[in-house]
Amino acid sequence: MQRPVYIKAGKVNKPFGNQGQLMISLEPGYMEVIPDTGHLFMQVDGSYLPFFVEEWQGDEEVLVKLEEIDNPESAAKYSGKLIFLSQQQVPDHIQRNQDLYLDLTGFEAYNENELLGPISEVLDYPAQKLLKIEHNGKDVLIPLVEDFIVSIDTKARKIVLKIHEALLNL
Image (cartoon, rainbow, N blue to C red; front, side, top):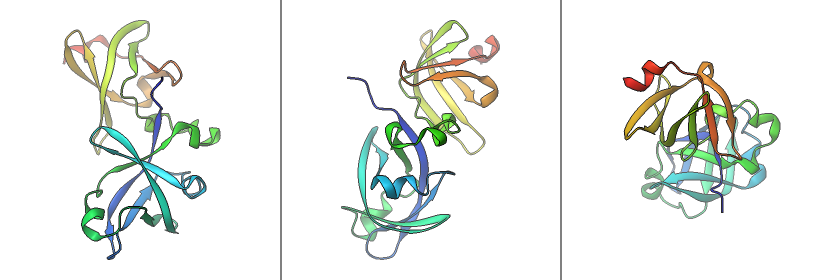
């Protein structure tokens, strides 16, 4: 069975109120998608856990109430967590512009035709995202920028990059 592909849709900013509500920010295009699906995913301890939406209010910054989060203490545990949607939930017209928000963990990375290795993690830094690739027995960090991406094949779980060999030796 193939692992589902998840697309980053936003982030939990902070808890709000005394009933476990959360303030979240969403990437462009996802404001209507989550209320329509009725659920979202958060990555907790390496697994994507589904959370079902009870209430949804707002436009740019959204106040959301999720099932099973019912007090400020449990809501606080999710501050800073990224919000994901299953790729099947995201309409094609949004996906075309969102390749950089895919969770590429587990994808095979190639430098043009050369296999670099599996992506073990996607590090999300303020300046940019980095792919952590297991290459020749060591971890290599490659910036995830549009200029380096040749293609992303979610069905084959493969990303093709065009990078200079010197990046692999840093």
